[in-house]
Length: 425
Image (cartoon, rainbow, N blue to C red; front, side):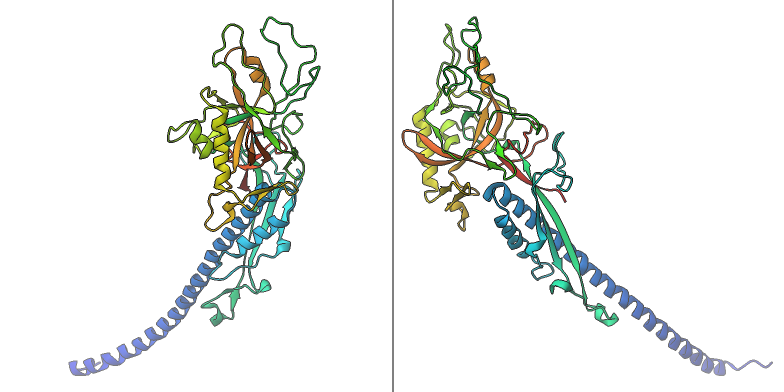
């Protein structure tokens, strides 16, 4: 076979290359179509997952809003909690538009049953919530809030759906960082004859015979089956049982280190003791009366007495608190504060300055130690709304926000006025 001359060979090669170029263009076009489809899938899939996270954030916010409302704002009804959940969850954008939050999908658990969520971190025997709220959020076609697709229409998919759900529970708290420097005795069962308002379990000096009918005090615990004698919550509304005003008429005073058989006097239900509360700025008693100390105090702590405090300082401090929120009033039916500047925009404070956290102490421990240096052992906290001042301080018991610290004792929901809202989903 006679080989082609070089010039003929050169003329032949372009025709081969031209044919291969056409095949490559077809392959690139097919591959581009596949890659384009994958890119569209990634973009639309990414939209769905971003929106899913936004919907979950909205559900979390709604559930926490409902639980917070149950804990502090409306302890006797779920209506306001439902409204709060819908308002907050629907205000959160899911891919640029408000999600659907139907009122019917804001539901509540109001009893200790297996249907109520367990709360991690709480001690045994009871970890389940007494009050919780579950919120469902929708961005879907059924609720006319479906997500768009950007490449899906090329494949016949014009929208996509996401849904989210969250549950938040009202949990007992055991720590707060805004404690008023006044401790009140927890309630007890009065058995003394004749009855009085002072706790009398042991007679002083210690050599005296014990009382025939001593008063009885049982501190609160986390065990629901216990029968404490102190301030409790009326289950299932989680509202304070004391609806009448609490009147503080005086400051319990006595020598810091009694000598000569002169102990501190028996504690009285209308009196309180001044205690030293640590502060981040190292200020003292008067500063603690008028501003937050910003240092945590826990159930189980033993506080030192502040022997330099006076009742006049307390009256002045309470009056200052009233002046910081003059329009606030107490609704005794709903057991909540209304008209507070804390609800204004911008608010004067996160909560009304007239609502303070009072530590409650064990009168039995106090009575057993008042022959020497009285021990002020904290067994609970209560919110106290300062209603009026003058020669005395009149106010109402209320719930108060706190945190849950598993390194310190808890008390059961029925006994806890210090509360927090926890996501359990």
